[in-house]
Image (cartoon, rainbow, N blue to C red; front, side, top):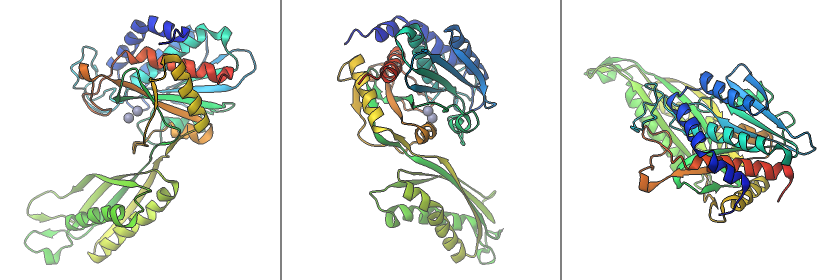
Length: 397
Ligand SMILES: [Zn+2]
Ligand SMILES: [Zn+2]
């Protein structure tokens, strides 16, 4: 392992970073309600002597600027702050104090790594050129996404040349970090289908239009789009996560609702989705004499990492932690992420921070009630963000 001064300092700060992460973990806040977390971040950043703006665009978002006073590019580092509506089942001593709210996506670690990186860089401001901005972002888990709000209404990307973020991954062992130039995550959209049939007595189906029977056909026919109509080399996946209908065993329901999520990697596939889905819904309902309404809501776009910036970031992490630490992620994932809105505006990269540790039983994925992370990842994540940022603004390659 190298003796990079940023890494050495991050390892010295380990206990402080762990305490910060546990404090945030114990007090999780749902999307766009991150008052306490934003306040914690604001206090930390002000103590570093940075110029801090609070309550960006009417949210709990925080933006801090570290200006070297020397010519150079501007990089923004992003950490998201929100938790999920999940009841924690890790049994950890630092478990959530809020029933039904949990940091199950690791955003407590993202906030901690961002604040750690801010400290590392502020301590070495004399060695920097250009500007580094730090944004604590609300509402990653809830469309339209805090990123979109902060960019469109808060103007946080004005004068920014590149953007950097990390996301924890329990499937990657602590000490390793995954990079992916190009497409990394999927377009993530939603739809609602409401079917209107005619309710009736269970004994007399011929006098009714059974909304459950129609909903089942709609569900099956939608999957047919995936398997028979779509080019398998440009994939998409449809999940109907909720199917709601009926009240009793002996009543044919007149109404049914399907709530669905569609993930795709390709812009052209995404664009064709509303027409394809509605055509199937319409055809099935027509055949069954039912009426319907169809709504399609675009969520987060696909996250496309800038190739040259991603390669530079990977080289920085190799120099920091050794050649084995940084690796190329073999394929995109169908998850979504609102950091994609940053990547649509400026060259950006998000890398995967390994937080898994099989020998310690840290194996559960994000969005699980048993998700936890190996806290040894916190100083490594902070040092990686700081090293990538420093190399970027100083123009190292
Ligand atoms: Zn998440
Ligand atoms: Zn997340």
